[in-house]
Length: 525
Image 1 (cartoon, rainbow, N blue to C red):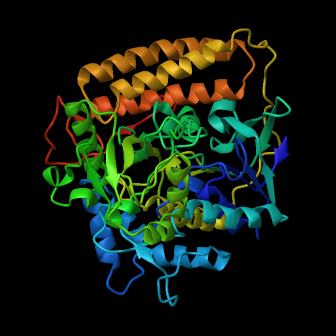
Image 2 (cartoon, rainbow, N blue to C red):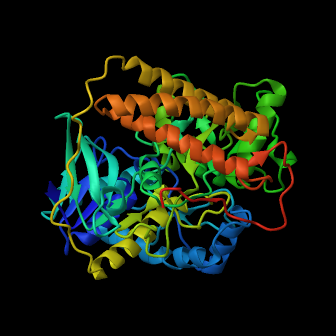
């Protein structure tokens, strides 16, 4: 058994920021499935939203968040996050993040994205997430109080209620060392889920391969509540190219004047919303999806050719370079784009301190449902949420008096054998992602959801039998979590009998007068 003061599972911005804030006072274990740098945070292009300009205000940022959230944002939480935006940015600046300066060099350049009424997105060119994580990763690797476990994947949480311990809270997790092929017991009075979202439940996604809903699934199995999983945000503009299936084209391009066009060159967004290309993501994604289906198109096009090449190279150097590698000169040609699953707005229910219902267990970042995003996340609020709730969790952990248990039960694999047909896992993975894309995508129907639920039940039985009889592997753990997460998404979608934000139903096209959250409670508790 390995014992730590705090166990953090996941190495995106939320997990890394939390580790650095705790490290001066606590012994921290940071567990990550691949390398520290492999996360959705590192792929974030646009930036971080905060009211930093004199022409902007906290009230305007709150208002924009509430509008995008379609009536489901938690107002006190929204204010809590937005009011702490400047402090979060200041912390990153102190860490050394090289945010892009404005033309005068006297302040930071702020861009504007869909749903924002002002320029308030601070960024590092078009690779903000990568720059932030590179800065923090170097500090993490040097800190003596942080022990990093790369190529480790968490299997399940260790809860007192499940294992008969006197304290019913969370006491750590079982973790598979993928390189040694050995399950280890990690003990900690404080465990934090920072595993990101569940984009890999869909066939097409901007998310990394690590986004398999691990934290959400583990928390649910431990008895936590999960909310609003029906709200899966599809980013409107993912590059459409056979060699770049997950490459995102940042929303900041539309903020800087990008125009969405049909193959004929016709602009179509003004017909769908008065804000045109600057409408919130749910509206733009549905408009693109409708135009593609109506006209039988493989993609639409984002046109930046009216901007000088110098401007594009200066503001979007990574997108310019990547497209050029694929034979697309964005200064001369429009960019082929399609919507793709991008962000999980629901998740594990938490409070102002990132605490779940299970004592000792926290959830931060995309894994958590805080109430900030409502029915649709406002662009660039995600990294802000990571930073604010990492600080909140750190403050709560540091003042907590919760202590270790002396011993925890070890992992029992005495009744299992080595898998004999691992091809079953890859086939089930592929089947799941395809029917989720077909049946639980941008526009849904009762019949499609029921078909998905039926297929999920069949997969669950097969995977449960496999899990009970064979030793665990990375692929089996991820598939088990993905199928459970898919089930939570479908169950939430079936309960919502209206169209709101990211959930569009042909059977229930109207929006109800009263906005309600979809909260699922596990029978285990």
